[in-house]
Amino acid sequence: MTGLFFDEALLPEGWANNVRLEIAAGRIVALESGSRPAVGDERHRIGLPGLCNVHSHAFQRGMAGLAEIRSTTADNFWTWRELMYRFVERMTPEDIEAIAAQAYVDMLEAGFTRVGEFHYVHHDASGTPYRDIAELAGRIVAASQSTGIALTLLPVFYAHAGFGGRAPEPLQRRFVNDIDRFARLMEESRRLLSGDPSAVVGIAPHSLRAVTPDELAAILPFAQGGPIHIHVSEQTREVEDCLAWSGARPVQWLLDHAPVDHHWCLIHATHTTADELRGMAGAGAVAGLCPVTEANLGDGIFDVQAYLAHGGRFGVGTDSNILIGPTEELRQLEYAQRLLRRARNVVAVEISVSTGRALYDHALAGGAVALGLESTGLRVGAFADIVTLDRSHIALAGRSADAILDSWIFAGGRAALVDCVWTGGRKVVTKGRHRDADAIASRFRHRLERLLAA
Image (cartoon, rainbow, N blue to C red; front, side, top):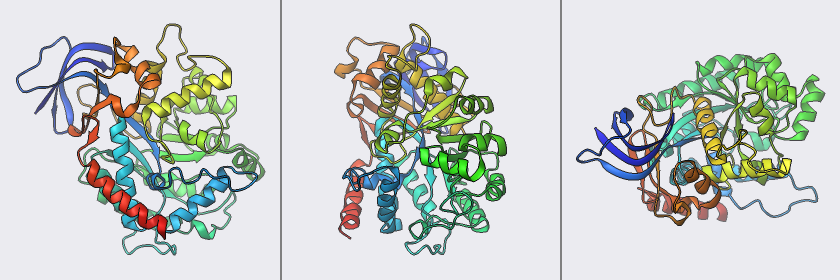
């Protein structure tokens, strides 16, 4: 049994003072506010529930900053994708594990406690499956277990290069499976995580570009009641191609032809109509927003205000991992809305509501649903995924309650503010540093130097 005591903590019902909780078998088993510390309790000033990172391609952490040179007169998402494909060609299983571990350390040190890994690199550089179909999924699992981040593994089904079942391109060969091989991948992925009570396994049809309607219907049962994630409507060209193929926009096609419900997380959904936003919200789907990546790739801006007006839910993810941190994603999300509407405090739709608190509450609740958690937050029965902030940081001087979140998100540097992090009751970050940060960084550096010299 582990006891923690917080001077103030964010509970599901709001901020509370003098909060004591007990942890056993990875979960919070007792919690009381207005309490006193017990002998042996670890004491902290500010306690927060850890956030879920709903969408990550961990391997892309290795190419962060390497695609910022203009390649054509029309540099865009599609030209960036070609650079990413060439980076993927060179990676070994050892590279993928080392890069993923570094990405997960970065997430933990920033305040993410669980990651949804949208895992689509499956085969060797020639496109030949490894003897173990889940070789690379195993590398993701190893990286999560060595760093301590909780994992929702989302193996990706990828079969085509475009709408209508177009044959995959040569540079996509490491991603491609047929349905039978994907079934084996799912079986092995579940086996890999069978001993981890905090792990969740779902599925990820990559996109409507990469999956035909028949294939989508065939793989949905593999989710077994878990999360279903899909890229959708990220680019205007994608919308145009979907219209040409089906006569419908991507989100509308899904709403009309797939059993979209609360298990579904629609990643990006950037270019959506008012009717599509209403339909997503009504179905209970979560919008998986990745504001930093969406800005970096020039995707566009999701209309959060309209979506929330319909009761929609969202979570945030780090996608390409160009920059990792919940505050970065939440700040970019709000600032994009301000630029779009030429207004301030957009996500806080009610008067006198803190924008930081509104962002955090939405990301906490939506992220938990998207990654298949039954409960989240600082409450009895939830996994003990906890973040503390450094009260001595100048950004928090004189702040309390919601002003803590406003200052952390909009006025603080994440590395200096996050103090300690627990996942499943295990303390993995102390004084802002992961327990194995140096060793993991050393492996990452060695692998990147070899990879980029090739």
